[in-house]
Structure formats: structure tokens, C-alpha cells
Amino acid sequence: MRVAIIPARGGSKRIPRKNIKPFAGLPIIAYSIKAALESNLFDRIIVTTDDEEIADVARSFGAEIPFIRPKELSDDHTATIPVIAHAVQTLQKQSVIHAACCIYATAPFIRSQDIVTAYNALITQNKHYAFPVTTFPFPIFRGVKRDDAGNIEMFWPQHFATRSQDLEEAYHDVGQFYWGTPDAWLEGKSIFSEAATTIVLPRHLVQDIDTPEDWHRAELMHKVLSLS
Image (cartoon, rainbow, N blue to C red):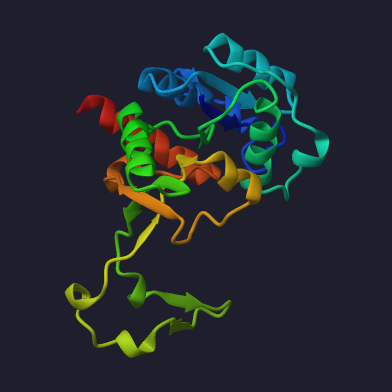
């Protein structure tokens, strides 16, 4: 069985009710559920939440809520892997899971074809994890840190005179979804390691949403993409 697991707790602080906040006409979690459905990969699409309102919204778009997430896995400090591991462990009591995909609830640019591509990479490369990355828009080796007085210092001063085109390209996690084997989730294996493989997405399809500024930027991006 292949399962999509969408973590969506109710206690978001920086963007209240973030997981079901309206985004371009739909609760934002709906985009993740729809992409999972359109991929035609999953035997089950479940949302793990501690919040009844989120559960109701998720059901209305086609997801299952087979359990309510325990309180000890619903605070501000709980990482993603323990939440997915709990869901995998619970679901495996009913059926054997071959692969589980953690899909974030706030990923309005997620595409079903990328979910499929990453799954194929997971299987063909025999990895524990597979997920999308994208490039940084500026060479990270030219990055600076700034103190309260406005003074700056390079993180890598040895690259002050290095041409941008001669610096190694750097990538970052997209923050949309992560495929993993059941053992990887249950054993808490590190996602950012040789146990993982990646696919590359274009930057214009990537926007992590953690702050109100991120949300506003994502709305602007969505308007532009909808016109293209």
C-alpha cells in the first residue's frame, strides 16, 4: 500500500489557522489533497491532525481522518518525522505499507507529476527518501551576516573575489513533500543524507509558507502563474 500523510495541526502561531486558511479561493490544504488524488498513486490519503475543524475540511476534499493525532505530537516543538512515524505505525496495523509520502498542508504549488517523479526516483534508486529541491537565486558563498548596528561580515570571506559563475551551485529543500520507506520513517533516519535522492523543481514553483510575508508572496506568485 502507498499512503499520503498530510500533517496539519491546529495550533499555528505565526499564521493563525494556517492549514485551512483560504488561498486563491480554497482552503490551502485542499491543494495538497487534490495533488495527491490526481497523482493516482495512493491507496489512502490521510490527514493527521489534532483539530476537528481541519479534519472536517480535509474530509470535504477527499482525505481520510482515521485517527486524531495525540496531544504529545501536536505542540510547537514536534518535528515532522515523529508525526509521520506515528501515522505509519498506526496505519500498518491495518495494512502493509510499502511507501509513505509526507505532504505538507501549505503547499499550493505542489504538482501531481512531481509526486510521481519523486516516487519513481525512490523506487529505481532504492533510496530511503526522495523529495524535491530547487536552486538558491543567489550564490550562498557570497552570503553575509549582519549585526544590530548594521555591520556585515561574510560567512565565507575566502570567496570575496571569486566570480559568481565559479562558485558551486547550492540547492535547498522545497518544503512540499517527502517520499519515504516505512522503515525510514519508523527508524527516524535523517532525510538530508545519502539515504535520500532528489528531483529538481524550478524556483518559480517554490515558496515555503511560514510567515505572513511568505503567504503574501505566494498569493502574488499564484496570480502570475494563473495568468500564464
